Length: 275
Image (cartoon, rainbow, N blue to C red; front, side, top):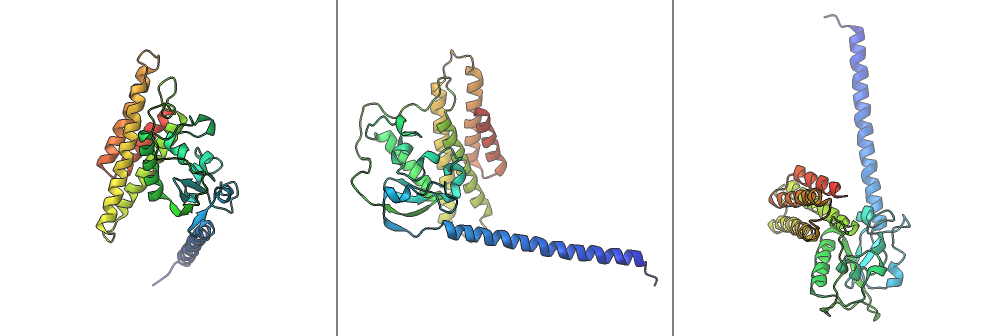
C-alpha cells in the first residue's frame, strides 16, 4: 500500500495542532478556575456579630482588594458578587459600605431624598422584600453591633411615605429601572438554577428557586402597575409609555409561567426600551 508522504505529514501536523490546542484550552480553563477560586478566597470574610458602621465604611468596592459590604436591618451582607450593581460604577454604589436600611425601604439613593419619617407599613414590606433578595443572592456575614444609632423600623406613620420614584413624564425613574433590572437578573439566576437541576437537589431547594423567581416577577409586575397608574393621559408620550410598560408587564407575567431563557431575554429587552 502506497502512502502519500504529504498527506501523512499533514495528518501528523493536524494531530499535533489538535493536541496542543486541547492542552492549551484545558490549561486556560484551569487558570480561570484557579483565578476564580483565588478571588473568592480573597473576597470572603468570616462571619461575626460585632461589625460597626465605621468598619464596613471601608468596604465600598473602591479598593479592588476588598469586598463590598452593606448593612440591612442589623444584618451585614457581602455583595462582592454584585460589584456591577454596588461597585464604583454601579447604580447602587451609594449604599455600599454603609447601613442601607432606609435607602432600600424608601427606595432612594441619596440621603437628601430621605424624608426623615419613621418607616411606614408599606416601606417595611418593601424592606422585607429586599432582605429576602439579599438573603437569597449574597452572603450574610454577621450582624451590625447596636451602638444606639440604628434606624427605627417598627414605628409606623400615616404622614408622608416615601417620595414618589416616578418621573414627571410617568415613565420609570432611575431607581425603578435599577430595581427592575436587578429583579430581572435574579429571575434569570433562579431560572438557570431550576433548568440546571439534575435531580440531585432537594425538592425543597427547587421549590425555593421557583418561589423566589415568582416573587421577583410579582414584585416587578407590582412596580409596573404603580408606574401605569402614574401615567398622565394628557401627556404627549402617554401612548408610547403605556405600550412600553405593558410590554414589561407581559414579559414579567411570562417569566412567572416558565423558565425558558428567551423569555427573560424578552423581559430585559423590554426594560431596556424604558431607558
